Image (cartoon, rainbow, N blue to C red; front, top):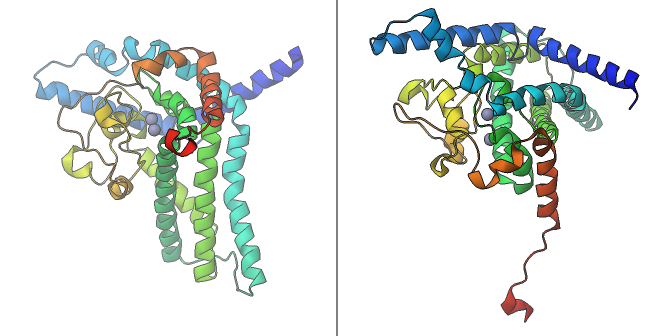
Length: 332
Ligand SMILES: [Zn+2]
Ligand SMILES: [Zn+2]
């Protein structure tokens, strides 16, 4: 690669990374980060008040931004993966944007072929709200189901382990993802969204594209409710009742636990209903704490940047090449 190509690649990475922070939609942008900070501050003050300790700025800074978390090697890897992926993920973003459009267009064509009167028509406010709620539910189900598949399909799990081998959590851990895993997730989620849009189109004969904006608003509002705290050291729980309705930060932290009791629990994003359906919901007990990461036997494979990007290929390759064992009784 020439120096010029490297410089332009570096510029693209920088612009893309800044774009994440400055964009209005991303969960790592200014407003959702500020919202998470305020919620964390309020929660910490409440805890200090309950335990009768005096809150000083020094103590609050130590509790909110502990060096042992934000300067941990695992966190430094999160920052590096974020920057590297900003360069690699153009194709993923493209897939996420294009797939729903492709599926909707395909269904439009199918509708046309069968003589259905389908159109992209403006709708009443009530219909737009209904479509927006429908698509928020579909998005949440699709993202949860994609996450479930990443744990249940051995090949996908090899790539998803990159997210799970984090030993400390901070908001950037959300993007500690192998590009293959990120691409597969986006394609599964986007395809299900596209199908859902197409289904609405076929059933009701029309689909108002402005409703997609309402869906985005719904997801964004949820992200303002402290989404970024799910990847943090703060075990914020919504309590036994609300933890059965919404996935709290502590419930996602349980998902990152290296305790076998917590394996394959809480796949959800917004609503707990999908985990309840899959039988995977885990409602933490009061004061329950977790240690993050994967088992000690494998953790060493992911303690370098090279390991984070190449170990999944090596392990996935070994899985693919593994020959099915012949049963000695039948092969005899
Ligand atoms: Zn997971
Ligand atoms: Zn996570």
